[in-house]
Length: 196
Image (cartoon, rainbow, N blue to C red; front, side, top):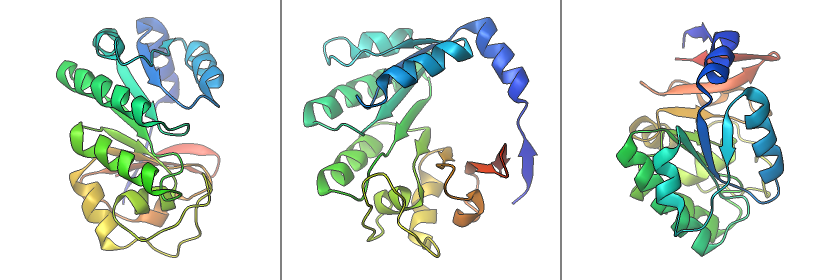
């Protein structure tokens, strides 16, 4: 893989200039932090969860963030509606696979979201991503299960799925190896790198 640097300051300047709306259907545990981080960066967060309004809200957003951390069946139904609206508008959809591999419900709902909408970015640690790609991995909550390697099944899933994979900083980006035309974004040595 070749490594490319991101112009973080240029991106931050663009965000502050354009003030994009970031629509979150996110984990109740981190909702306050998510809103404040987006505001500090210069964007405009909105935390609309009701299925009666999510399509309309996604229609005015610049991106959609889905997080299954505090999962309910009704919440995922709202996520699907919002994701379809975001897909129709052509804005990126980010899915945080928080805790995938811990329970069958999490696995099933992640796969439903992936199969019923175009997910542009998947955020997860190695074991979460391995699980939703079909590996027999058991996750301990949101902690990554130690893995020596991820099989070719995960690579195949990722190659035809999301455009980007964001890893938690506890897992080195090189762990997953090459992903064809997909990109891995990970934390390496304290900086942000994009791996092609």
